[in-house]
Image 1 (tube, rainbow, N blue to C red):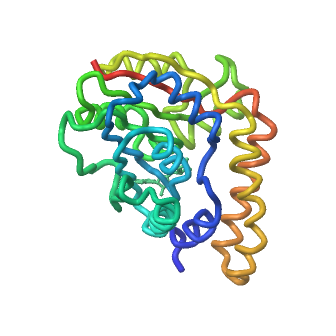
Image 2: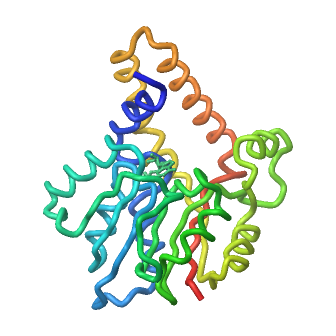
Length: 249
Ligand code: SAM
């Protein structure tokens, strides 16, 4: 099993592959102020195993296309959609978020949680904009400083790992420059990381290592994720995900 397949094996076992929660999703949707009567065309980009895709399908009168490049995540979403009777309204696409298959001006809502960093926030919001109808909404979460003065060591770490890390105001500037009208943003609460993401992830470390006992990559994946959890616990007041809601002009 190669490194990516190992990651897929660990993360397919948990409901979310990044921070978020039902409360976060509901808050974001409330800020969108959508017309409940309107039938919507929605994309969930970097959907993972699709816990939020399923929640979107339950909350909205929508046809949803869920995009991810890892087939095992999409297989789990497809199974759950079938079990929930939502499969007629959820279509999956196995592909890359930098080569999306949508028609220009065709989507009412683009949702993307914890995923846009893979192509960079600025690149993502610029390149996805054309798929939205005029007036369509972008709902996207992105790593964000909670305040303007994060500790120097943490700043160095994140600037190395993800050079676009910034404050909420810098993300809003990017949205404005890309031709969106920012409607709202909020910072994800701690529970979206700890209770809804890291706790289920940490429960999977032992069974994952039991499946791959002599695999060095598996051990280093667990060590990396344990280090990430420790860093988050130490610095939860300094960084989080921001959720950004913006309308295409
Ligand atoms: N949205 C899900 C959630 O919040 O639980 C998953 C978030 S996870 C941190 C990021 C997701 O983006 C993963 O499912 C990963 O497979 C997907 N991904 C990474 N790079 C991608 C790319 N270039 N194209 C499509 N999906 C990608």
